Image 1 (cartoon, rainbow, N blue to C red):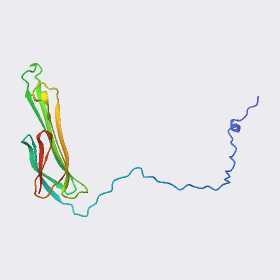
Image 2: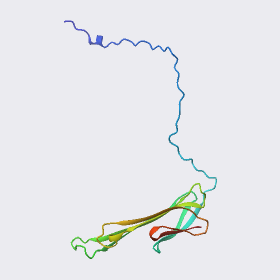
Image 3: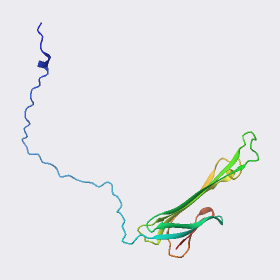
Length: 174
């Protein structure tokens, strides 16, 4: 029996040269713009800082009153969370169950492009216990009131926005 070297099986014949009989013609590239980005807004006006007096009320009660500073092209916001606990009279004395109630509120003032320096987008929100949760043993229900609006804020003139359930905010641009 003859032994054939293994290398004899691994030799490869060279490929024939590639012959192109017609000239290659490339189709012109087409570009589609499926995604459009909004134009970058630039202003020639110098950036300034302004103060806005804010008074947030709910049901006639003042929740927060103070000043917010913001750049003419920036945002100013305030938020607060109040957590209160109290002993529940009907609670099991072995577990010492406490009633917990959360109340949150927030104010946000943003520039309103391209409507000018006096225009702003304002958002206010208040979340508070609802129904049975006002007392101990509630189901953790809460109610949220939110108001979003575009508004003109003229210098020195108070502007009041009113939402549902007695939620309101008064803004004065100084």
